[in-house]
Image 1 (cartoon, helix red, strand yellow):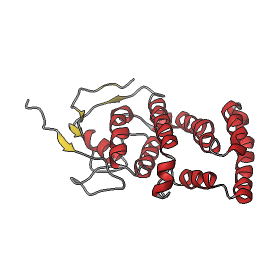
Image 2 (cartoon, helix red, strand yellow):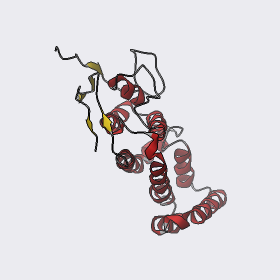
Image 3 (cartoon, helix red, strand yellow):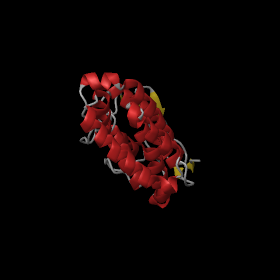
Image 4 (cartoon, helix red, strand yellow):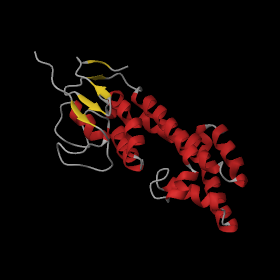
Length: 219
């Protein structure tokens, strides 16, 4: 049998696209799985699909998006909604313990809340989260703190999507740290269930090769 020639794309793009044009991360997943063109592939759990579509579109830099997301595609193939309750728990814990504290740490008066959220038992964390939210708005209104305003502008836009260029530059170290933590979160979410997958159509994404393989256990 003659091996299939790999389709080559240089970039994973934001948004949805027409068949055989640009690809986002979930359109690439559908392609390699042999599914019809879609950014909602059946080979990826609904929760992971929604999570990765949102993150795909939130990353403004094409190279960063491609470098971060391309290696995750084979990890999420074969995931199902059966594991989504556990994935929701992991995402909630990440939000409370890593994402929110990272922005609170930018404002000295709120760093105590960041420490509390990192250390609090997860079953008791919601009141602490609401308390941090209340104090954060009070701090912003009272002080007009530029770092605070920049941090939450970026946070509301998924770590930078709606922030200006100057704000994004100032927040690059924090954004990079959070992006690395999201990669690890996706890996944990993908691993919550045994899965099988098969790459049916080869795809090379900026040098990262997704080759045709036999069906296998993904753990």
